[in-house]
Length: 444
Image (tube, rainbow, N blue to C red; front, side):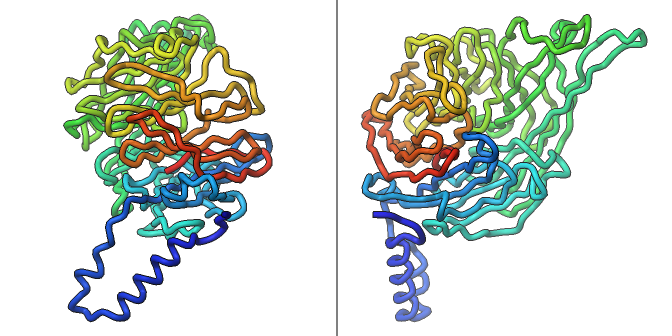
């Protein structure tokens, strides 16, 4: 069966509620307003339309919602590119969802609406109703902000940026690169800005003298105590003798910026002695709170990506050694996106040295990992295709211990797959109807 507009279950539910409201007195309002318990939740599929090149995702973003039962049903077929809700954004929208899947949060990326925050109530199919007021964070963090929803019960989002400027002495000799960070927190409930601060982010004197600097930041996450905000960082380097970009250099230990929360004051930088490379991720959340600690992926590590651990003392736990090359038996593993369930088991998207080149570059695979056991296993029940584009992947819908993902090569149809993280079982679900040069960027 094919779902093009509001699905049948939603219409039926709306009809029943209307009858109940019409037939009951005001004395029964407290009963009527309590929704019936359900075992389903909305699963919102996000689709990125092609701009100029297949897989670039620059033609805008569309979303379409079905319930979790439909998402698991391979006889269901949905067409987000033809019938989805167009999310305001000049390029690929930056989406987040509430923990229960009933609300979608968006900050437009680039263009005239870039930096505008909006939220929508999910009602099934292409039906997303804007709620609250729209607020622009562009004056603080620009029209193409990097932002994420903090794990504080859908209360707060955080957006960040960094700007850099090379500094020279009176003899025009390179001294260091000044990195200025801006960080903002956004009240997702009341659609208003909570706090904004700017800071100069310095590395050690030795690192800066050698030309290293923080060039990109992203993926804020709160610690368990709720009094520190961690922000992932990418390092770049210039040749101090010429101030020209250096592309062949020693990769330093992975770094994270730590700020007091909610004040966003007193920045410091912590460094892993175990993992090397960047911690800012790309489009998907890169760090998660689990069992009192923050678990963070790194990218570009010469030894292959690690899952790193930051403990309650706000320092890296370098005794926690979880390397993807070792766990998966591959070389040059690169974590593209990942998401844990509440049981500490996660679905992880990755590529490695053996990945084939598709229409949008080297593509990847899914694995099931266990944060406590530090194990990883490739998920063979999700088909591999060299044109399956994971680099822009944004969302994994989590429902209990189940995680929902999309799989479809660029420009080709595919399916939703549901991974039971407890058993490892994989269910092939609803068909995803694609469009030329376009791809799916996850579920919410």
